[in-house]
Length: 340
Image 1: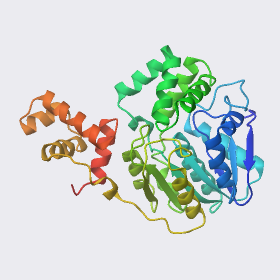
Image 2: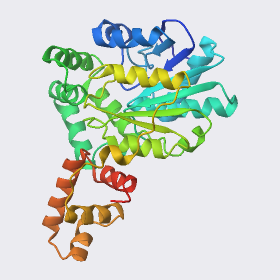
Image 3: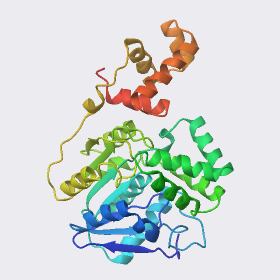
Image 4: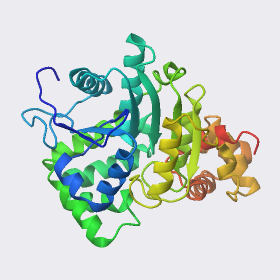
């Protein structure tokens, strides 16, 4: 990414809060969205919100591709905060931007401990491969490549289910300005490939808050639980709602928790009790425990004296009840609820 220009902007006044870039953004188009603008403006009443477009997108240098790895994402963001001259700053990372924020915080703090004063990750994950099953990821990529109009609408429905039809149409059109169908598919694959697992333990000294909506349709809540569990001393706060974008739904809850954390106020730690009301049957719990132990459907069928088809149906029902989209995410949930 060396030599690429990066467009950025700052809103408000106060201690800097750097927002890590995610897979699609446009400083100008985003700002024209009323609810996005309200969200950032409310943050800007207390902090200086620094946003940017990743190279290859938005208003930044479009003469080359966007970052293709977590290391490149981190290089862009560390280069930006150095160029701006931020001596210290907090970070906010949403969705795939959570991994970018984590990587940047780890790299920056390794060189200058204390430079990153706080970290908030919303709707994030540790490893993109856990977002959905291999088949589901492949199907989504195929739709984006082959039918980008339909693919952009599907993504809009997943990301912002409570938004109006007009808002979803607007976002779908915006996504199609991101690039060709193949370019969009490459960037979606990048989201699935991001893997921050190895760096998360290095965030132990940075006050970290993980926010996740319990019924997020894009990134299952179990992945937020997993993300928080991998960061020593991190706090997890479960929020109500199913919109993936923080400025939709109960945006006030996201704002209040974020600001309280940045101000050093206590934010109540939420544990797996937030999901304990999930009504799994005794048989489903048996199956889930074996899934978490790494057994295949055939192996589970043999142990429980069931048909493989019946086990497959149980696993499907379990995923539906937990609100997760992959077998791996169900295993993560089981690990977080070891007492069930």
